[in-house]
Length: 176
Image 1 (cartoon, rainbow, N blue to C red):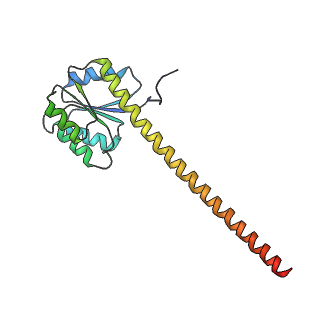
Image 2: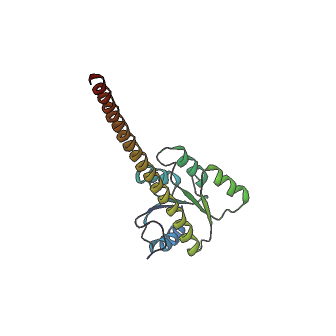
Image 3: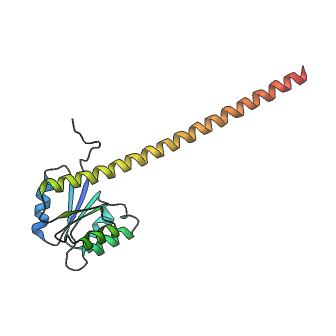
């Protein structure tokens, strides 16, 4: 039996890095898990894939040719369909200013390069579980809302029946 509160099998992870060696390393690390993994080699490509596929998590390099990871994250967070997707920066940049900037624009975590397999797996698993639990929570809230509406309608119906009965009883007394 798994200790994980939710099933992460088939979770979609988008890995974005312009270095194929880094993509291979992350593919080997995540490949043993039951995730669906997709890859992008540029910020522009990542935006297209994220918009179409709606991944559950994005691992994003900061230092890339063309659009860097910061700008890619900004754009992801500015679009309604990708705003909710958690972004973890995977980078060699570990300056405090870079960390703060990343969190400010919407990243949920950082993984420093060179990556460590257990750290990558733990952080990916943690954020996927968190997002899955948020979805479960939202579904339960919606179910409760609908259930409360049904109860309210039932109570209103019972109240109307009670009022009709009272009216009939009063009418019976008046007639009697």
